[in-house]
Length: 168
Image (cartoon, rainbow, N blue to C red; front, side, top):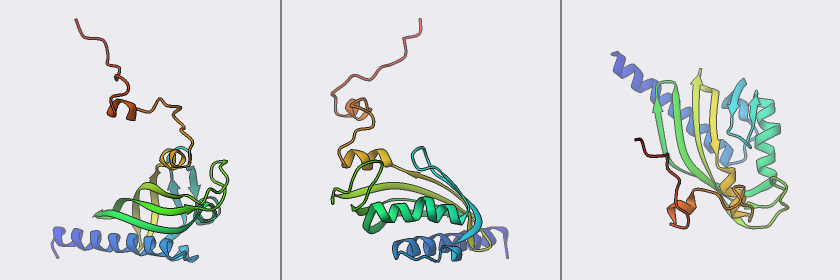
């Protein structure tokens, strides 16, 4: 088997492992050990935290997400894979049914944008850098964490973006 053929096969296996895991999350599976190593690392952006191991992931991410947001539908726009790494971006559509960041359940339907990266080892995820756009979710629930200073105001023409001083 050529190096290129082996790389494509490894990429396909990695992608399949990530897609099986996402399907399991979407069906509320409690068997995450089938998809993650016990000592994997889930590295979220600010507001999401870092989860060291499967038990911490379940206790501090998976179950709180389920408690705050029900009727979840995972909408992945694109999956990519390269060797031992896979990635995707998309969003979760969900109902805000429980406390989230100090906000009591509103019953609102929200979109939770995310980007996920996975390093797969022996068919299960070993490393999982993640970016979940909680600022967007909070805005949908009526809390602007940027207090009106978000750069979307530049996009809408409401504010003039600052620029560095001109060079002499």
